[in-house]
Image (cartoon, rainbow, N blue to C red; front, side):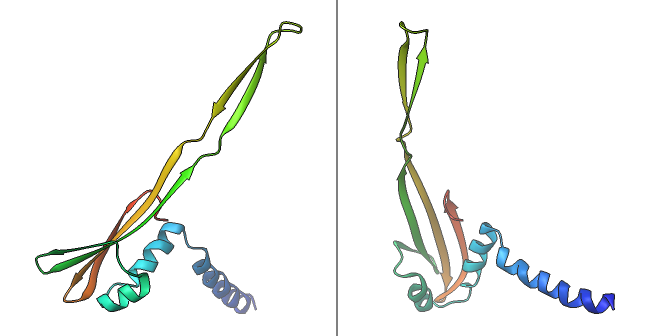
Length: 124
């Protein structure tokens, strides 16, 4: 009886694992599915690339995703001393510009995707 219960339970647990992939694994799986695609299929899927290069018989297509963020500004006021001689000091923090980007480059030979790589701090 225990074996009959554990088999369906085990299958349910294993099938649920696919829905909880790590972000890097999900990112890499997405682009691995594009291996073997034609150039037309790739452009239809991802849109027009930002840059293209031709190196010998290899064509490179570069897709870039870039976002600029400004961190929130906060003010911290601290008090020093005792009343009536208390002094207040206000310090402002934040307001920094943060550049987040991800470059994905596809290598095509004979019109088909044979490899891809990525670089950036916001890919997954």
